[in-house]
Amino acid sequence: MAHRRVLTACIVSVATALAGAAVAVASPATDGIVSVASPPGPFSQNKQNEPAVAIDAHEPGVVVAGSNDEIDEESCAAGDPTTCPFTPGVGVSGVYFSFTGGSSWTQPTYTGLTARDCLGPVACTAHTGPIGTLPGYAAKGLVSDGDPAVAFGPRPGSDGSFSWDNGSRLYYANLTSNVSADKESATFKGFEAIAVSRTDDVRAAAAGHASAWKDPVIISKQSSTTFSDKEQVWADNAQSSRFFGNVYVCWASFRSNSHGNAFPTPLIVARSTNGGATWTTKQVGPATDNGINGQPDGCTVRTDSHGNVYVFGIGRRAGADLQLMYRSTDGGAHWTGPTMVAPVTSPGVFDPVLGRPTMDGIAGARVDLASGPNVDIANGAPSGAGATNQIVMTWADGASGLDHERLLWTSSTTAGASWTAPAALALPTGDRPFYTAPALSPDGTDLYVVDNAFTTPFRHDTSSPRGLVGQVWHANVVAGVPSGWSSLDRSAVGDPRGTSQNGLTAEFLGDYVYASATRDAVVGVWNDASHAADCPAIDAYRASLYTATPTSPPNVLVACPNTFGNSDIRGGSWPDPTP
Image (cartoon, rainbow, N blue to C red; front, side):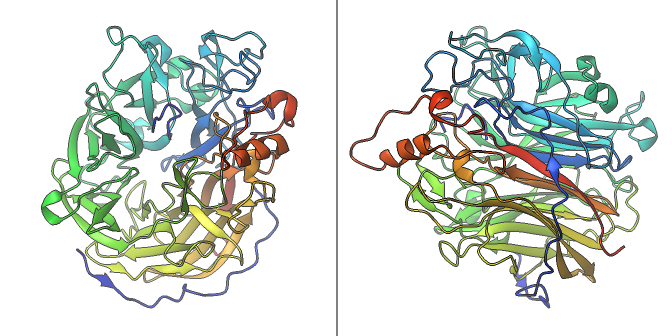
């Protein structure tokens, strides 16, 4: 989520051997830090969250990840030491590269508007200097505003046709705002737009060569009241597809300044048929004619081996939330739907101070998108050979009540015409999942799921320890049914109280985790707080906000450990355990 927010098909039952099944005990963690350039302190330069990841299907050793990365922001010591603001003009769209299949990472340094050297006590202004985020934005009068989404597709040739023989193109979609607050000199209208960066030379990009990136392209249609949000990008990467090389981005388009409360919120899909140079947009939801009267934030887009495009989101009908699917059979020109995939109950309880739902306790991390649909399709990339085109969706569900949240999954082998009854993955006792992400091997023989989970019950105080963990799961898939679940990795437990919104009033873990798979392995990324230190002074301040006598925030750099706020992106690569 951007840091500048003001913020039917019949369900068909099949054998669900997964539900309630025993899960093998995790082996020792083999994960590592993805956001490798992140300093341990000070806050907020040590704050990273909301990761995305993509594997180049044509060259699986090449992996890219993105996150909301505040490495270039000013220290809390700059100016008023009781505030930790974002520096106007400084971007937060971090990018990380791996050429070892996701087992090790590098973060390039470019040049742009920065405040990383603003360590106080004097207040600072963004100026040209080293950045660890996407290049090319300041030169266009733009700020890279996070909500990362990444995808690899084929590079177009000189004749405009797509072939893996031309090499690969990386797409990085993110939110963007204007550097200038002056409407007359703004690059676009509105509060937030969707922009896409591209590179055909990831090795040069990883080495810090900004020229390896093409200029960012704004793809959303903007008005003075538009707040575009929560985009996801996908490139049709199966050569068997009729629309091989097409690129799609979906997002929610808020049309007023009442962000987060404006319904209906249109769900928009943009497509490019020329490698991201130009885009056409189409509203696909909500469809009020069939009773869907809300399309909250968050979406997922994928393609199958034939080029059919699927977009998923949450809608509301008769007061109930539903996982919904939209489908295009002509490369995104026209859409049908929505059709219902499954009912969903958002987890968490409303926090009166934060104004958002939380799960770990008062002043906890918001979990608005915990129930959002996360999807993958076994499309046979890069060739399309061996595709089963099975679709798997996962989400965190709160129907069983607070402290009893479940990680649910459902699947379709009929192009979304029918879905299995939602089933729960048996998590370790006490785990309370809130972000999930599935990844199917391209041949559909392996299903992986990454989740972030709280390991402690809801806390009604801020003084009791809390637990946060990341985990990677694997199941074999036979005839469309996953079974034999095992844990490939369970990260060290961290205390999410050591994470923070920049305003200090609550924790912060972003809005999602991510996974991507090859025929032989998976790469997963998630939010981590194992290196974040709890700060009793912040705990006391946050607790006071729930009383009639709230106190003022403390001087973070004096009252807190240096590693307060040190959230990281953690992840790694794991081979198929049953090849």
